[in-house]
Image (cartoon, rainbow, N blue to C red):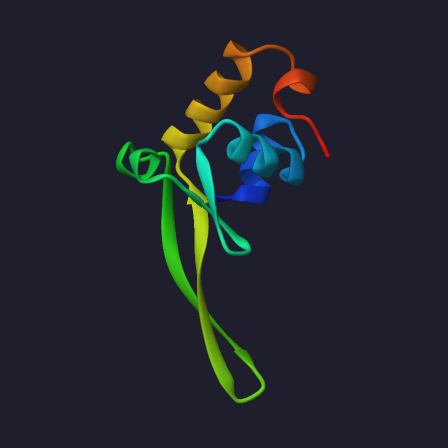
Length: 94
């Protein structure tokens, strides 16, 4: 099963913003403009995957990539959380 980042955060026991910030801080995600994406090495390991998605703003169709966390990725996030300290130290809300 695959999970949105919000669902993954809930399964790991942190807030979605804290998870997103931590993934950036730990250099697991990179920022591209306003978007945040997993680094290629974490996609290759099967922790995350990207799915193209489209939406409309008036008559204009726009596209972006949605990020999902795999079961393997959930286990990876739990291991990161357990291996680096308490929830507050790892997943700091901003």
